[in-house]
Image (cartoon, rainbow, N blue to C red; front, top):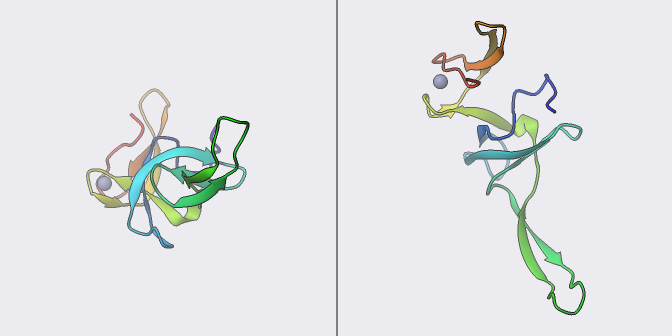
Length: 109
Ligand SMILES: [Zn+2]
């Protein structure tokens, strides 16, 4: 489920625009709509210590993507090769699609 107020969906290519990961881009792995955060593939890694469970697993340090606030990322237009503002339009057949306001590229085909 995605809320209409979010322009970003799972599998979108986005660029981080603020914070220590600014300028990096990746695919959205997950949208946490209630928290207004997104998890982006290979971005914003945090180190976590995992506790050993049971006899056979060892504890250690694992790296994991931490969520970023949705306002810190922008959809990346592959045609413009930069983060862009997006608009919405209704396609033939009534389907709602997002498009790049710069080049007109439709993101939801
Ligand atoms: Zn574009």
